[in-house]
Amino acid sequence: MGRGCADVSGEPPRTGWVGPVDHEAQDTEHRGLFVIGLTGNIATGKSVVAAMLAGLGAEVIDADALAHEVMKAGTVTWQRVVDEFGSDILHQDGEIDRERLGAQVFAEESPFPEPDEAFEDLYA
Image 1 (cartoon, helix red, strand yellow):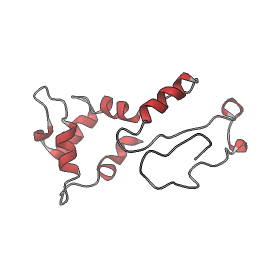
Image 2: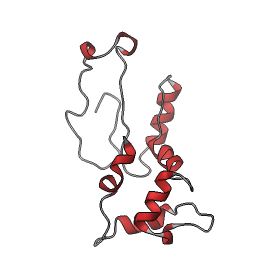
Image 3: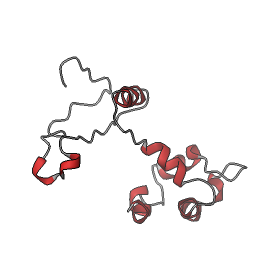
Image 4: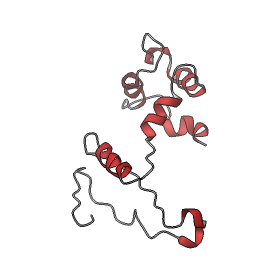
């Protein structure tokens, strides 16, 4: 942890996950820029930190918001998820009920593949 930082995630500290930037590998336009990934359990301040970074001029990419966007009713991803998990995961308006989907995906004896395995071709 850096000076003035506190780990509130409850996770053990990780080492080696942030290293020096390889300036040789970067083009001059992006030299000195960093990619920062914010992870953690629910209610640990990820959104607060993202807002602070945005206030300092950082470009923030919200992966959860992107996931919601690509899973909107009628999209290719929506169709793949419904084909894989069935229409029981849908709200009345046709949108995916993420709570129901999660209950199926993360059930102890789920017959479904891990989400990353099932949909990895959609991420590319």
